[in-house]
Length: 275
Image 1 (cartoon, rainbow, N blue to C red):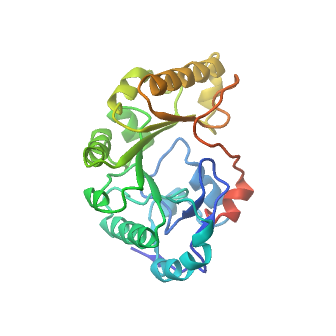
Image 2 (spheres, helix red, strand yellow):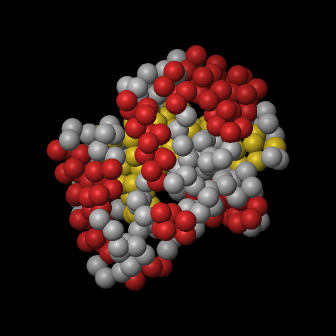
Image 3 (cartoon, rainbow, N blue to C red):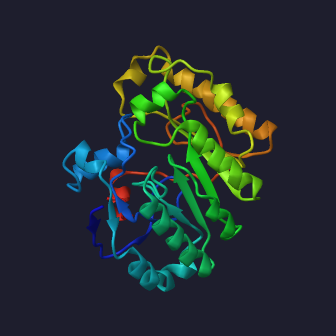
């Protein structure tokens, strides 16, 4: 695997539901084709030239050294650090990336910094041995493997993702799911309730619409479709005593959230070190 060097690693992020973040890998082997916003921005800012380049991840070789220097500088301002907003910390089939992610989380926890992580890969059971303040999640927008192979071609199978999350839950770790970017029925017709039930054990649910795909706006009354599913996610969460968050722009009618919201922009992504 190729490596790159960076001048900094730990950033305050403007990304929704974020605080500080690290992105210790450039690119992502999962190759999502929704399209992937992270890849679009990487191409826009000249970090990669093509999809083929994007799906060949590069590790930040000096990530450990950078984090050692930067934790003391930011420690008093950090509420938590998220892995990751522009890549995947537990990329499916890439043990070296998972090992580095575990090492960075250990470093942050040793400094009493809480971490969160989100993956389309598999969460290693070793995470249960780290701080009990950490929170770990998976992205899950379908249970249909044919859909996954088409839109998330090199990611972990859905069942493997859910099983890895459930194992952490059973160890007493706080878990969450990101049901985003959720497709409209003209892309795949599926039962949203089945997806909610498959992750009924989690502590928090985040729901968001699919953007940057013309098929969405071609679906009749797509705004009400996302309004209805948002309401289902809220009702399911409140009925089962879970935290919830509806991503900005998903629900067009008024809604409050029991998770703090913030706005995100391409400029903010660039400034926070995502690109």
